[in-house]
Length: 107
Image (cartoon, rainbow, N blue to C red; front, side, top):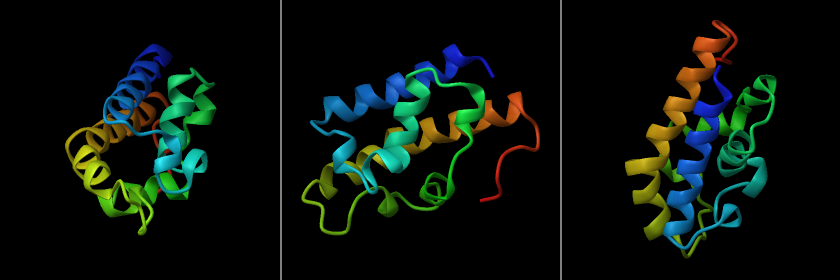
């Protein structure tokens, strides 16, 4: 996996997040969730660190999982996830699978 491609995906995700007045803390599980995954790839972690955990894998299923149920930012987060962040996450998964075929955990 070309780390620069993943870094670009992470950077793009964070640019979208910050342009909407959001931070990692506005998302479910904060840095332990999908926003933290983008942060990890943005910072150029080792390829082995791109293995998505169960929270990240589960987040592909529904935009609703990206924000806490009681979030006051839900009206901002959900459209952002559906229009921008989910496609970026899918791109990150595709890059990971290209680099290490068969290593992607099942969703």
